Image (cartoon, rainbow, N blue to C red):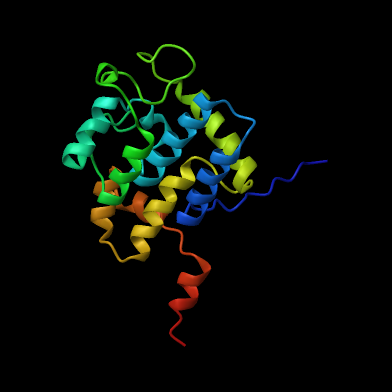
Length: 195
């Protein structure tokens, strides 16, 4: 007998889910302080940047300092092997200041690390698994780390941001890839009815 798999609808992380995740981390007494701080950083940077999880592993405190000073920074995307400028709003910078606290001597350290060396970043696959497991326990099976990226793209699309602007912001090579991420909500669809 053949096993039937149901393809789940991937949901986007909106402000509501972001706040729920942050509140859950804040109140989760089962995780150590180090992990709590790490989850705050992970969820904050994913929500505001549109980065892929494997891209946040390369963020150093020097990037955060540059963002706070200029509201942008440059990273090299692992996937496209190209430089990408990350832009941040005043709201995002305020959140980053809250969660990315560091000493000047730590400026070259990675922000997201496993338990040991701050000069060594978190292994990408391990981080994806950790984030997905935590998100599913809080939000349910339809959410993954990529839901942050999808949510940001969808929100920009629902606010009628030019798809080429979204493409550039998110770092896609083709606008068709960007358009594939835009997942209208039920309320978006209902509001668009013409008859």
